[in-house]
Image (cartoon, rainbow, N blue to C red):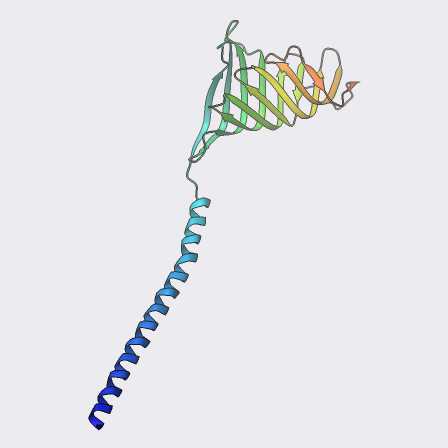
Length: 204
C-alpha cells in the first residue's frame, strides 16, 4: 500500500515538474517573441531612414520640348536621385534656353534657381526660390516656376516681380504666364505697376 502511494507521489512530482518546465519554456518563447517584435520595427525604421541615393556633382542636363524647337541646358551643382523615386532633385541651378531654329550658340533666356525638380516621365521642371528668369532688359522673379515639354511656356506663382529696365518700370502680381522666350508675358492677380526706385534690382 505504501509502495503504491510512494509510486503515485513520484509520478505526480515528475508530472508536475514536466508541466512547470513546459510552462517556463512557453513563457520564455512568448517573451522572446514579444522582445523580437520591437527589434523588427526598429530595423524597419532604420531601413526607411537610410534610403540609398545616387548623387552627381557638377551635373549637366539637357531637356527638349516635344517639337525639339527649344532646348534647356541645365547645370546643377548637385543632382540627386533617391532609389525609390523617379524624379531628379537639382541644387544650385543655372540654365540656358536655346531656340533650336535660330542661333544655337547664344541663349535667348537664362535662369538661376536655388533648387529644382525634374520629372522625366512627365517632361516637367519645377524651380524654387530664390529664382529669376532673364533676357536682355527684362527680369522675372517668383516663388515657384514651372515648365513642361508639351506647352513649352513658363508658369510662375507667388510674389511675382517683373522688372523692365528699358521702360524703367516694375510690375508685381500673384502669378504669370509667358512664352519660353518671355514674350507675351501676362501677369494675373493683385497687380501693381510702378516706376523703378533707387535700390531696385536692375543689375542684369
